[in-house]
Length: 81
Image (cartoon, rainbow, N blue to C red; front, side, top):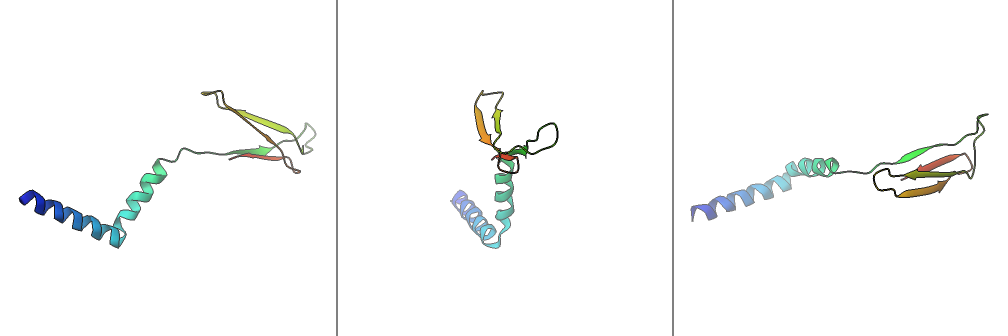
């Protein structure tokens, strides 16, 4: 029966932590630590510095060989989210 009492104490403590927001910091930190995303962005220009609208930009993952293609906007800007 002692084990059941300890389990009940842990459950009550956990609920109190959730209600006071103490566990919120731990949860959000764990989520941030598991983020594995990135973005690539830039501007395409010719040798004279003129921005190139509609240029094709390709990025390839060296590990998987998977490529993604985007076109630059009217200001020569591209973004891979």
